[in-house]
Length: 633
Image 1 (cartoon, helix red, strand yellow):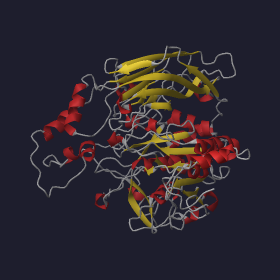
Image 2 (tube, helix red, strand yellow):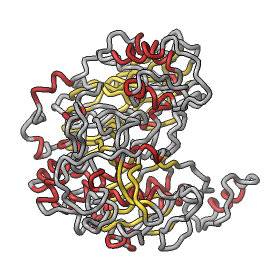
Image 3 (cartoon, one colour):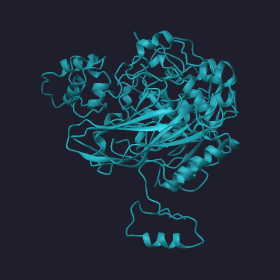
Image 4 (cartoon, helix red, strand yellow):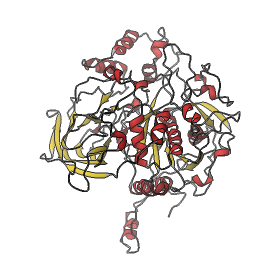
C-alpha cells in the first residue's frame, strides 16, 4: 500500500495504526515506511574543463567521442604519464562484446530513445518504481538533474560505430533502467528496485547510496536486505544476480564506505575510482570493503568519462565513483558472455584474483596478505582487468560451496574507552568451525559486528587483524561525525583476508587518538566468517603471483601494524599539514612540504581571484600546475 503524496515526515504520530496492523492475525509483517536520503555518486563539473587529447593509435570506431575514451584505449600524449587502460580491446578482439547479457541501472531514469542507447534498450529490464509503471524515462527539468542514470547506462552499452557519442564497454549488451531516485526513497522502493525481474537481469549497477557527508551511518533495511538475498539466491536462475555498487564520493569529508550498508554488504561488489594518472582521487573513500577499482575523474586537469547525456546529447564530464561502477559492470558483462555459468561468488573471486595493483602501485597503502594478494583500502585488490578476467573465466572451475562460521569475543566485556584509556584490544578466537558442516579453511568475506557506546562516534579508529597477521583498518576516524549514538550492532566488512585460514586468534583494536575528553564502552564484538572448506581450484598454485612480482617489495607500505596514516580529511590546510608532519614514520610525504612552501605567507587575495575548493587545490595538484597563483580557500 502506497500513497504517491505520502509526506517525507509524518504529520502526526501513527504508531497506533502500525500496531493495529501488526496485531492483526492476517498480517505477517507491517512497518511504516520512511523517506531515506540517497545521493548519486557524481559531482557537478564546469563544462569549461573539457580537454581534448590526440590519439596515439588509429581510431577503431567512428563514434566521435571514441578519442576521449582513454580508459578503454589509452589516447594520452602527456609526458611522464604511464599508458593505462582496462584491457577491453583484447577482449573485443576475442569476440566478447556483452552479447546476451542484460544489465540494468538503478537510478533516476533512462533516456531509452537516445540514439546511442535505443538499439540496446531492453524494456524487460526496466521499471519506474517512483511512478509504478513500466517506463523509466527520466523527468526533464531546467537543470537536467535527472541525467545520472542515462550517463551511467551509456558507459556500459553505447552502440558502436553509429557516428554518435562513444562506445560502451559491453556495446552489444542489453541495457535497462529502473527509475527509483526521482521521488521518495524508502525501504519498499529500494526493495522493489533491487529484486526486479532477477531471472532476466544479470547485472544491477548502482551509483548511489546514503549521504557521503562523513557523518551518516546507514544501509538497507529489512525489505531491501531481503531483496538482495532474493537476487543472490534466485537471480540468474539460481547462479545469483551480480550487484555492482559505487563505493562513494565522501573522501573530501573524511567519509568511510564501511559506514554504508550497501557497499559493505557481502552481496555487492564495491568499486572505487582511480584517476587518469592512476592516482587516488580527492573524492575517494577508503574502506576495507572495496573490492576493485575502475577509472574515473580525478585531478582538475585530468580527463573524465565520456558517455550519453539527456536530450540525445553526449558528454565527456561524467565523474566520481558513479562513473567507475558502470565501467566495472560492463567488464563483468564481457566476463559473463565468456562464461555464463559463473555464480555471483565466482565473479567476486575472479575480481579478487585478477585485479592488478601494478598501475596503481605508486599510491601509498599497499599491503600483502598471507596468500600473496595485494590489497589497499583505497583500491581494493587493484584495477579491474577485462582481459585477465575473461581469460581466467574461460577455464574456470566453480568455487566450492560456501560455509559461514561465527565467533564471539571471549574477553570480558564491556570495556571502557576514554581520554585516559585510549584503546581497547579484544581477542576473538576461532577454530574455523573445524570438523563441522561450517568448516572454513579459505576465507572470503569477514564481517565484524560491534556494539559500541561512544559520545563522539567519529573519533574512533577500528582495526582487525587475522591469525596470519594481516591487518585491516575497518574504520578510519571521521572528524565530521559527532554523533553520540555510537555503533549499535553495526556490521563492518573486510575483504583483505581473502584466501587466508581463519583458525587462530583474531584481534580487534578500537581506539580514540584525538586526545579529546570523549568516553564510552565496547559492549559486544563478534565475527562472521565466510569461506570454503575446500581450496578453490584457482588457488591450487599456492601464494598469488603477479606479473610484476619483482616490484612488489617497492610497492609495499611498511607502516607498522595499527599505525595507518591519519584520515585524509580536508578541512583546514594548515591543520592538515601539521597532522601529516606529526606522522613522522610515514614515507612519501614530501608533497606536504611542497604545498607548505607555496602557502606560507599567503598574500591577501583580490576579490576577483577565481575561487576553488580547498580539496580541489590540494588533491588536484593545482599549486603544482600554477605555482605563481594562490587559490582562495
